Length: 394
Length: 238
Image (tube, rainbow over all chains, first blue to last red; front, side, top):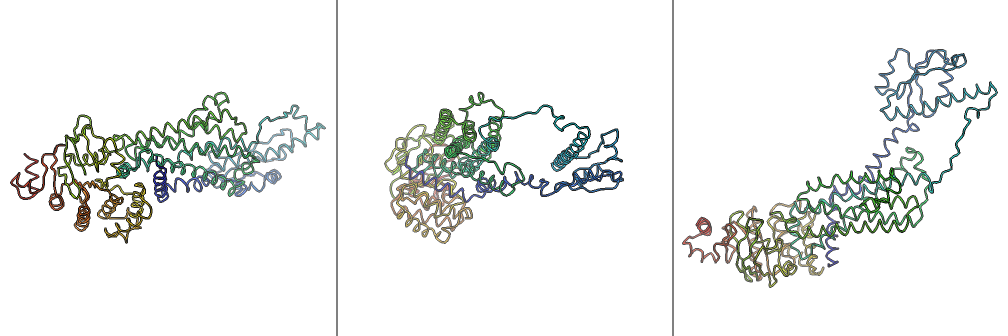
């Protein structure tokens, strides 16, 4: 194998890819701009801190004024409306996120023998803002009710503890914080998706696309060996998949910073990863890009046209989500059984590195299996490139 | 320079090229004439090592097709039926890319690239992406790509098919020039006027077999026909 020729092929592939708007879109624009915006924008817009929920209230009299004053906050905006208004319609039209009808003699009921007032709440629970409004109102109502209860207890002389005779004292044995657990779910998923989808368009274009446009025929009459051609193309596929994964992380970080607050605690993960684990995650991302690029190349070279390659490869972006999500529900013993499954193996490394529980033995086994898949896939790709039946359209 | 010895290619039960034997010498333009599907392109693909012969072999520039495919590829310049250019690359980038694949030194490559672009009057458009080019211009770039490494053998599949008169003349002029430089040139065509004008010798191929080989004058004597078109029709319908 002539390394100079491999570099020549890789250089041309990179130049060609960077001039292709669709590759740029898949590699840079989507991971760094579109997805973070899609992920964080709805939460940002729905956030009651920036945009308080509007609650319509029908009062029968002013005995509920104290209650309303107590539940009003920066996030809850109360609007009193007339009794004749159709509450259901107002909510359905989106004029208000939630509606409340307060009974007459509200304070007197609470002080009287009945002791319990009923508030009728109207809400559309299929809307995010409706759900947020409901949670906020329920929280505020509970606080108001707790105040009444403690007043009642004080009158009877009982301490507030008498209502909670048993208390749970939680001792967490999690090595890392909740931030790491949160990331251990998200990061393998995102890196997996980007490693698979980031270079997918490029791979289809440089294999099945070249075949379809007949540019491959001219290339195959050059003195470059089929191995040199496959390796040259593979190098750029890995570079694009890797860049796309890294940019996805950058995009997510930017998303969190720009829209911070929108997703609460995750902006302050309180996460600390050792340099060793960070390197391990980087290496795992590279291996993930290499394995997925090699697998996709085989499938794509096999296709006779770009469209056929698209049909073969598109399901992969869904398939990759399965192990990432399944990882959360599997016991550690079951998970170990999948330690040598393609893609899955590297995702496990990333998760274990984040949770600081990666062991040398399992990491070696997982990396080794990933390399075996890659070598097999590349060997098959080169073999297909050598087959005149697959490469030349008669 | 090209010696085909009983070259045969079968695709399953279908024989695309059957026992084809001919020679092309240095400084000779050899035309492969035949109707569509006669086996012209398959013969070209066999000689450019894209396909492996089912039986028989050929030597190209002294290298055996089966034993030294790499060396054969280094000695040939191929203009395929479709230009096979990258739309997002410029003519200069094409020449640099293919020249580097032939491991040409960078200085020689750049100098030769500029000379060739000048000859084909493409210098002004040397840095424009070929996706914006007309068919004629693309064909010129593809021809230069085939010739960038100065190969002794050229295989040109339908070099002027579908081109306007000016582009066709410019390509034919270039082929003349290469002949004078002593290259062995094989052209597949069904353009009789072009074959009569350019080719020193022609082979008529029909149903995968060569049915006649010779200079136009020899074929005229053999068939008692004047122009190549009539010679061709008579031989193919016999």
